[in-house]
Image (cartoon, rainbow, N blue to C red; front, side, top):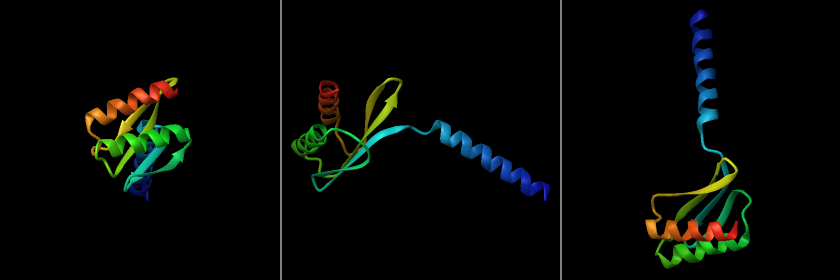
Amino acid sequence: MQLFLMILLAAFIGWIIWSISRPRYQFVVKVRDGVPDVLRGSVSRAFVQEIAEVSTRHGVRDCVVRGIAKGERIGLSFSETVPAACQQQLRNLWILSS
């Protein structure tokens, strides 16, 4: 019984650490076959359209763009399928739309 409680306590502590350390996504946009879909949070339609256009221009048909809270700002995170030039272009557009 005591071993079970110790395992349960360790699992609970692990869950707390995982919950605190995971990124806080403000929004998640997934592009499938060039069509963007907002999976979580809210982001302007104009920026969602920019994601679709920029990713298409760079030949990216499937990707994920996430908005991560960094203090008072929101930074962008990208799936590995998004080339660096496309990421930078989307970051520039994000700053202009904010």
